[in-house]
Length: 318
Image 1 (cartoon, one colour):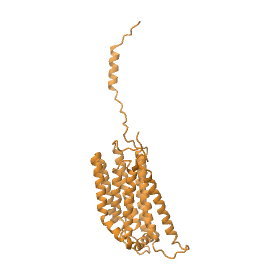
Image 2: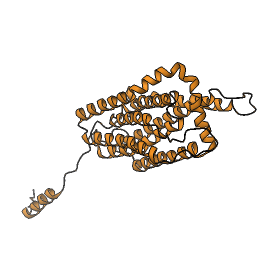
Image 3: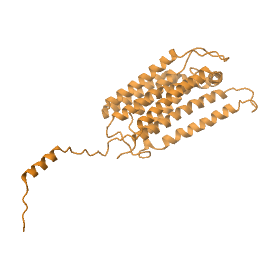
Image 4: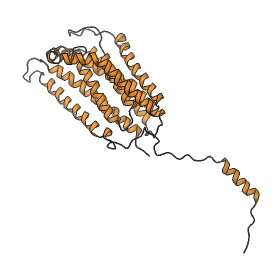
């Protein structure tokens, strides 16, 4: 039997090296991991909203065809205002209160329960900024030029009521956990769309004013969402993908797609029926229904795109 002598200096050096090595941090099962390219996609989405806002203003305010379509939808709302006027007027009267209470309750509850003070501050700041920007745009944008269409020169784009409703819904969406965001997106999008349609039925705003309001909200709430996702590392801010919870069921993505396609069909039919040579001499409510369809399409397109963007960014649990 042989014995091997150990050098005590080597043993001491080994202990010193182990002491200098930093312990490896094991990722927890609930940590959030943003998908690759998230920042780029959020920047593209924000730029798309800004571009869409400029295009909406140019076509529906600066061109003859756009002015005619937009103004015709507003004028034809008289035919619908009779039976629906009382309902929409009451809804619009209560809209500011409903929007503020809805956003305040959800934001406050989530903030207190999950201690998401920074996220709440970002969401509220973006909501306020979107509403201020709407009022500033109304004052800064040039008046409607005369293009042979009898209309008020006063600029009404974007819609302030729709901005308030959509920004409040967006704030709730940002504060919701990933498994509840698809449902929050559908309910909030429907609420914003109903608000926009009510302003048209009540002859407060043209369809383009409502669409512009959606886009203004997107310009502020999408960057705010990226900031929240980037700075929020709480374990609850992860999910198991679509279908992992009833609040994240694929129904909340599929239903707005179906409603948007149905509205597109209504819009095409309404406009085709007034094309010369089809057989209809004059429009009574065709432009109005085309305008309603435009609001629904824009609203649910924004809903599906935003929900899908956030779902991709958050991804699943590791």
